[in-house]
Length: 104
Ligand code: HEC
Ligand code: HEC
Ligand code: HEC
Ligand code: HEC
Image (tube, rainbow, N blue to C red; front, side, top):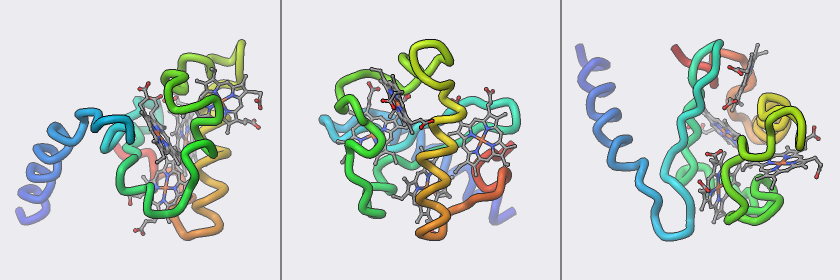
């Protein structure tokens, strides 16, 4: 029961959180994926010290990752995401198992 209440509180928080704050990016981003959707807490992640350009390598105003990462113009986003996300998780102790990111 406690975890259900927490889940509801988090959902409400996240629906407010999805608003883009100025130019610092969304608070969180949810990516749909067949093994389970991935929630990336954008605002919270900035404290891990990644430079904006390490992910937004064409600049923060270049659009969503999927805009280019479609498997033709640029490697499919699955490949790019696994690389940029897992490399830091291996170094700094974030989730590296599939289920750590792909939640149902
Ligand atoms: C670890 C990777 C990562 C870092 C570091 C990062 N971002 Fe992001 N950012 C993302 C992802 C992923 C998205 C979602 C893009 C999408 O929807 O495909 C995003 C989205 C955004 C967007 C919305 C872009 C759009 O067109 O929808 C802005 C603005 C943004 N980030 C700004 C920043 C700024 C400013 C910094 C540095 C303080 C930063 N980001 C650092 C991964 C990152
Ligand atoms: C304007 C187009 C464009 C956008 C937007 C874009 N990328 Fe890329 N990305 C590319 C291209 C083209 C490549 C391949 C050439 C290169 O490495 O620059 C690439 C390569 C990469 C690689 C290296 C992949 C590998 O296999 O070595 C990563 C990681 C990456 N992008 C992550 C991201 C993330 C995360 C986002 C969203 C925050 C993003 N990119 C947005 C065009 C884009
Ligand atoms: C610069 C390092 C770094 C990068 C890049 C990074 N992460 Fe993380 N991430 C972490 C660390 C460190 C944690 C552990 C957080 C904790 O224990 O408080 C974490 C935790 C997480 C979690 C667990 C839940 C949470 O939010 O705390 C998820 C899910 C996650 N990251 C997804 C991603 C995704 C998806 C990407 C790529 C778009 C990504 N991360 C890129 C450092 C990073
Ligand atoms: C650090 C977080 C993270 C970890 C760990 C991770 N993934 Fe992912 N995965 C992602 C992200 C982010 C995407 C991009 C989703 C998108 O395309 O919007 C993705 C995409 C995928 C996709 C493509 C889904 C689709 O619908 O196109 C598959 C399949 C996948 N991952 C499988 C796995 C498997 C299997 C593992 C374990 C070996 C794993 N992932 C571990 C974050 C992660």
